[in-house]
Image 1 (cartoon, rainbow, N blue to C red):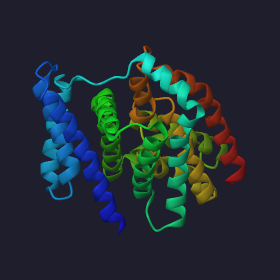
Image 2: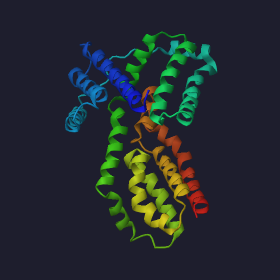
Image 3: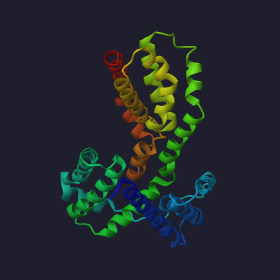
Image 4: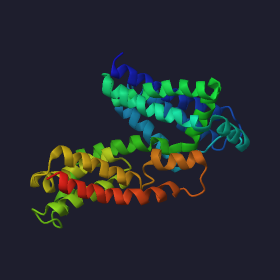
Amino acid sequence: MSNSILLEVFYVCVGLLMYLVAFNILKDPNSPARVGTTLFWGILGTIFVFGSLLPGAIVGILLVGIGILTATKQVKVGKVNTPTHEFSAAKAKLLGNKVFIPSITIAILVICIAKFTSYSGTVAIGIAAIITIILTLCITKADIKTVKDDSNRMLQAVGVTCILPQLLAALGSLFTAAGTGDVIANNISNFIPQGNILIGVIAYCLGMALFTMIMGNAFAAFSVITVGIGVPFVFMQGGDIVICSTLALTAGYCGTLMTPMAANFNILPVALLNMKNKNAVIKYQSFIAIPLLLVHIILMYFLGF
């Protein structure tokens, strides 16, 4: 089966999960903001299920619609089946370290499928996720209803932030098309002296980290910062394109660790673990991200030239 067909199947599966959330909220008369929340998940599910068939203008209107619902605070968490503390503790004691097997398995499967088959990385994630769900059910002896309930709980816990990665990626493309990189290059040329490799490397790495913190996505930031800083102040000074661009991208990931805009990394764990401090994940990751950013600058300077 081709990449495009499989990818479409996975998008439909995600959309069906969103329809499930919408249905669960709609049938509960006590759900807060029942109509708005149902519309949000229903519209988002429609975009995933029928997005490839709908005209771009229609998808844009639907996105504006869910944006209005979010801005007017019409999207709330409905009733979810949350496991009790006693149940979770008993399961944790029973499973022990086996609980980590699915997490390790999905990572290994994604790498193997993407490397040794013709499937893309995105499709590899979908295939690995399905296999890992089956493995998880076998390890935990849970029934398929648990997958439905936990999917509903997770999506509602994440809420409107689940659309942030897609919107930020689109914003990155928009910035590139609008020539934001050229504007950055023109402005920053007043501060970076021509021919100073170290300053150029520092600006490239810091620019990637800071713009990623704004965008929440290193891929979205990469094209803009590479055009604005990487090309004129690093590559034009003799920097190795492969080494410097690779390090620049991973320098952007240092910014990912320090921003709430990276919702899937830093907001999702807070929501799922019901943490009181919403910035706790970012706080502790910063102690690693900042030294890593310094390491990137050093590596790019010595290995890229």
